[in-house]
Image 1 (cartoon, rainbow, N blue to C red):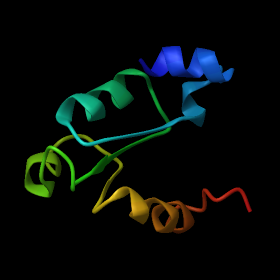
Image 2: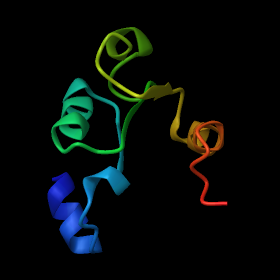
Image 3: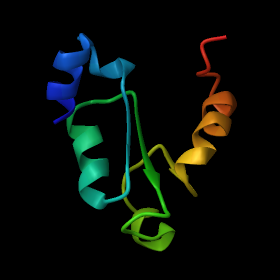
Length: 78
């Protein structure tokens, strides 16, 4: 699905993609696609406790936490 979205948007390098999801499968998908970052939101179908032990680059309380995460990682494009 990530590769399909990349194709539609004209993105060729998965290292330019941040995958965000709320399930273990989402985290695995991001890793398998070799995305630059794979994040999970913990207000979806799975809790922080269910997601924190899985391979990830960060856990967000909600998607509204993304701008702060981007700032903290110097990824705002400024």
